[in-house]
Length: 474
Image 1 (tube, rainbow, N blue to C red):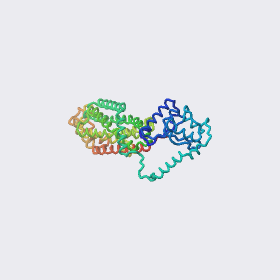
Image 2 (cartoon, rainbow, N blue to C red):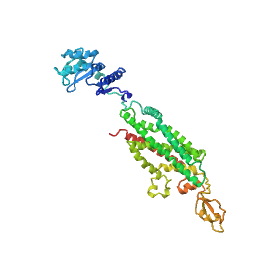
Image 3 (cartoon, rainbow, N blue to C red):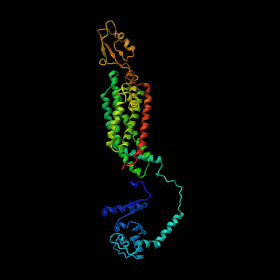
Image 4 (cartoon, rainbow, N blue to C red):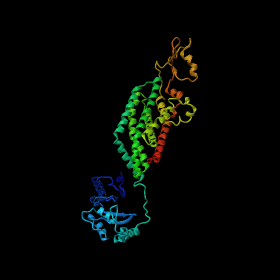
């Protein structure tokens, strides 16, 4: 991974330690190729063989106390280095000897070495040392002590980082068919099961209620995407943390790319889910109703995936996320206003958590979108039957009841006893959601805007959590 960043200097600390002879040879040969390609390589090595030693160009030899005993070229067959030690009183090096072992013995390194001279002092007085000092002094005199070039943390700009990271993540997602095809099959199965379970609902009062439950069933897709998005995010986060530590790119481009890379798949999944669900259930087939359902469904799915990312960003493991998920989902479902209308909730819950629940705005928006223009026509099974008193028609008998603001209508208003009256509890969809749920069609587009706000909030929270958790806990 470090080689991908093309560092200006590659420092290796004993790369051959613990390896056999063949593996050590392969490693050193590869390092030699990097050096020949123009990369400066600084390497510490422990007791190399003569073959491995021949791959190096320069040597810095240190003796006890960290003092320099030699620095310079090794030369062909190590003759430059050997000539230096021989010319300064060192023993002759035979042609069969390993040059690395020879210099260790000369300077007295290890238990077998017996140094007869102080090679650190010899180096200080040598002409090679004086030439090196003169070169360093010249560099120091001519170097710019106050460079004007700004030192950036990253090699490229934020926009370029985002472009590269987003392109890489897009390829990574495209090359994850088990993730995307698995999500697609799961969602299409859910879509078709839900759609055919509520096949072609009509306009009766019972069908109206079933439509609301069918819309409620779309929550399943949201939960599915949350569950499936979290392991994928945690895998990508492992790569991010390693690469962020190496300063390949910043945390912000990665977090933004993690959100955007999901959008094409979300739109595709939402479209296919609608195709398998909307018309099989028999929802309102007008352009406005279809369009509102489509864009609202896309936003809630985007919000759901971002919520999954938020939970995963807080969690360090899939197990922790699996513990948090049920708590969040239970709250979202219980207080959305469908399982229990807001007027029936305890004041403590209805005063704040009901208004903070995104599912409230989602299910209200879809319900009023579907039912606001629905004229309810009760089937005979849906009618409530009662017998009017003698001498009164059903209309006359129920007049006071309807004058008090009751909903619904009488199916046979002119009927008289002994014929029973048929009462339908609602005459329109708006009567149902206004009286039972305290919802209003005037809030439809407000609810859509609120969902956009929740989605934006999740994105901001997610980016903040990525920054907070950008480094792995140790």
